[in-house]
Image 1 (cartoon, rainbow, N blue to C red):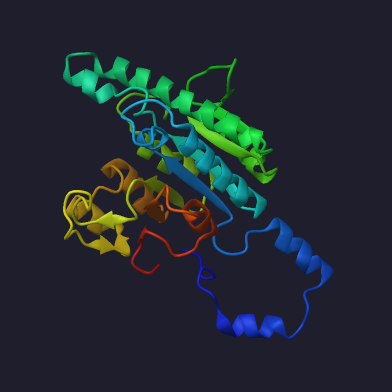
Image 2: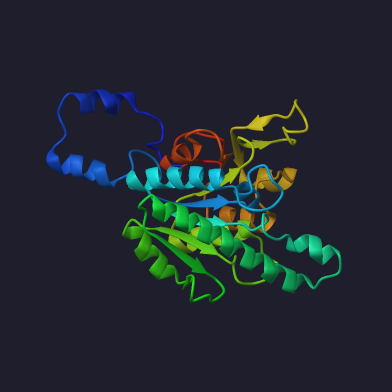
Amino acid sequence: MPDNINTDTTAASSSAKSAPSADARERETHAPRAGWKRVLLKLSGEAFAGGDPMGIDPEVVQHVAEAIAEAVQDGVQVAVVCGGGNMFRGAALAERGMDRGRSDYMGMIGTVINCLALQDFLEKLGVDTRVQTAITMSQVAEPYIPRRAMRHLEKGRVVIFGAGLGQPFFSTDTTAAQRALEIGAEAVLKATQVDGVYDADPRKNPDAVKFDRLEYGEVLQRGLKVMDATAISLCMDNTLPIVVFDLMGQGNIVRAVRGEKIGTLVSPAEQ
């Protein structure tokens, strides 16, 4: 995580001695106040449903869109990967005998529904947004082209990635890690229904212990429910930090995007 996440009192007192120049004020307007410059936000399909088992909760999407809009206003470049569990659960049908590959493709299509919903809410807030999909859907989205996605981000647009990796047997967590690496994001921010990573499900076990920080290897060894092993391994091999935090906590998305201390940080030992 960047060194400037925590407030540096020495720097603060020093900056108070002289007013910033016009150029400095301009830079402050167009750059994040602290933390990351480009991030990948991972939203699960279940998050879109709110408290319901399926469907889309407009209040949740509005909450997410407003937070992303605030982050973009701060100058942070935000890309998003959406899951699709609120629309279709391919693994469940595969267990009932459906071909796993076909059911995964159906799940990929479900993620695009969430992408389009988030795009609509963002654009109603005046945020330029592009949806890119790994499966060609030219009437509703651009094809996934990494360099084009990066240009969109540089222009202050939000880019939402849908349809997973476009291949079966890969989760949207793995998609988030892969897309983050390909577009040069500085962190994967995974929004969940709890405020970090615990040694047990805190919704079922009141004695569950929360971790403020973990190393990748520890996550894999303990089998902690952060992301799937493929996603964790990708992040570990490329020293890409993961921040796990509560999606619906007031101001949490903005805090995570700004690089403030929140939830659980998964990173190399030295970070």
